[in-house]
Image (cartoon, helix red, strand yellow):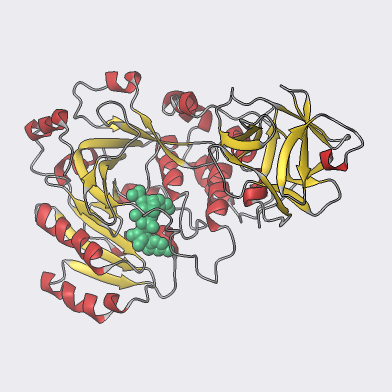
Length: 471
Ligand code: UD2
Ligand code: MN
């Protein structure tokens, strides 16, 4: 059961205009389960005042499951046209499917997007749409509770302040984060149940005035399948004159992915790394000089072919959208406090035993596991490292450091002032562990990585770092 959030019981005392804007609810789906998909639809119908619900538009993104064919078509007939179903003729991905949905859903004044495995809460509608009815350039996001994928229990999400309030954020590699609502933002509102500003949205659940979404150009048509669109729309809203608000009194449950579920694979006609390409398009379009911080965190994307973004740049100019620096200073000022701007890289790539075919491999270990030696695969991933100006030898958000036995090399999560221990001497083919004065060493035979007394005659202490590029 939902943990009692006593301050939220005050949501009962708000009065909403009885002439709010009407809405089209858009649900895009690809191979969703029957009960979760229909629960989304049923909950919207049951819990939305009929005079505001113009239609529910379902976009089937090229599913192949039998229950999503005739059975679905027959089932929605009970609502006499209130629920519409459109089918994509090829897999578009959730991002373009949502833009298609915006075109199909033309009856409501507001577009409300929901993932296909949600349950809207009681009185979700008024609080979510009222801010838009007041100012059409506001985009709102409900409080998203977490429905467990097996037990279907509902819990508030983590990552917030003591009352559970969080703002949407990112780290510099573009991973979605939630940071506690800070004092400065709290001061901007009179009560805890008022909407508050968020730099970014998670992506799946939001409400936006339809015409305003079209004025913003919908989603970048070059974004493919999954990922990054939540940041694109967030930056576009803020930098081009709108606002993004999180609304405490509108609650919607969402079933999060179960541990290990990788998501639906991209279709064959899509090239590799669509999500990474999306990230690059977004930072290239919106981040200005801050994009260097993204590339410092994900150097392998430096050479990624991300397509043409000249239309997006022109849009930014024509709409006189503000700079990312303005956005970071005025709206997202708290994010670097939680995710500091990363230092520049000195070198990055695979760490290969000099002139050998063996590379350091994290084997996916994190938080204290050993790094090992494995055959070089030149695919990046667990063999992709970077050494930065703060003397950290890193993979993603993890640092290499000395293990408890004083010789093994382990990998563990680090902040910017932790594990500043390494120097790479390119010409000497050497990694020095500065704090002990020892050298990075290996046993190709035993697949082990360790530190030992420096010895220029030992070939196992010789390394080369070679760039790896994502494709
Ligand atoms: C989150 C968002 C999701 C989206 C994504 C980043 C929330 C709660 N969820 O991941 O909405 O912004 O981040 O892109 O904020 N789908 C398609 N075609 C596809 C793949 C998915 O139609 O090719 C549908 C899918 O059935 C679902 C929706 O798109 O209804 C979102 O996909 P998801 O649930 O796998 O994304 P999620 O929640 O992991
Ligand atoms: Mn989802």
